[in-house]
Image (cartoon, rainbow, N blue to C red):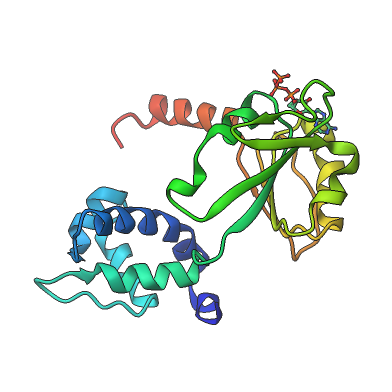
Length: 210
Ligand code: ATP
């Protein structure tokens, strides 16, 4: 992972996107890809792709492109694809249930291992093959879990985040509208679907041709 420290954050964020596309190419038996082809597929301009890839030690050759195998090897190492990251989901409502049914492992090595909820009708059951435990004794189950997805109501997000952090979780994907505060060493990515939709509609109206 040492080399990852040198990759700029903006580049690192595009890594999973590149990884997914290259993996599909590899599955189709393709051994090389041009930056133009990549650019059209992932919607990132080719100058940015060339700069990104130079951080990965991959130098495209004119008329040849990039070696798919080499890039995949690099991405696997950097994204820790060889090791499955265990994820817990908190809040098995509409959104949480959808995530439990979604097959994340199709494209990467993450797996929701367990879920937690307050509702006695949900506790003790499962959704998408994932067991749902009581939020009351969440801490008893989290030993090997590194990341959490928060799909609880915003009002309880901070409290649950604090309990997760105290249990050693270092990454939280927060789908609640609440902004949560965590220690600096914990990474929080915030995805508010209603804000994203509103923002899309704003851009459709005000920047229709871009
Ligand atoms: P639903 O239709 O099941 O109510 P929803 O997504 O509209 O789903 P929310 O009120 O957002 O409902 O709650 C999401 C889930 O979080 C629910 O399953 C709820 O039982 C659960 N939940 C609420 N408070 C907590 C809590 N403190 N700890 C754990 N789970 C909680």
